[in-house]
Image 1 (cartoon, helix red, strand yellow):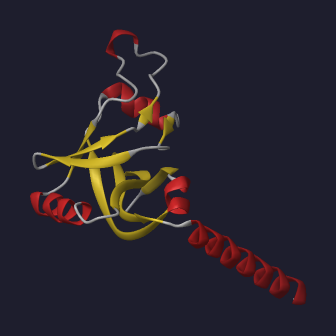
Image 2 (spheres, rainbow, N blue to C red):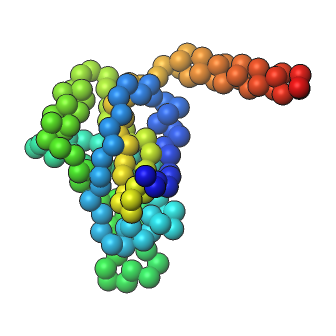
Length: 150
């Protein structure tokens, strides 16, 4: 299966504990796909919301396509996520729990279609972030020691 990574929401991975992941399609216009192929996309501040049995991705910024003229799109319009009903209901039940949010984690092309990975996330506290940084530093030190030993 061919897939190509478009972007990763690093801030989401830093600020949230990811409890569950779901891959969803996204409804886009033609100029949006062309702009995404050029890498003109930002996921900072993006989130998903369930509204009337439909899932929407809000806050995703896709810059207008340079040669789009009158067919260009609004950069921050809400975009519908393509999910099955049971997946939407499951996400809605999880999102209604206190302290949980639906956050886009990454985007990729899969067989020519844009897919978004949505995570059910819980916010990290400051001490959790410090613990993550300490763990990463310890892993780097261990890898460096192993490399130097060889």
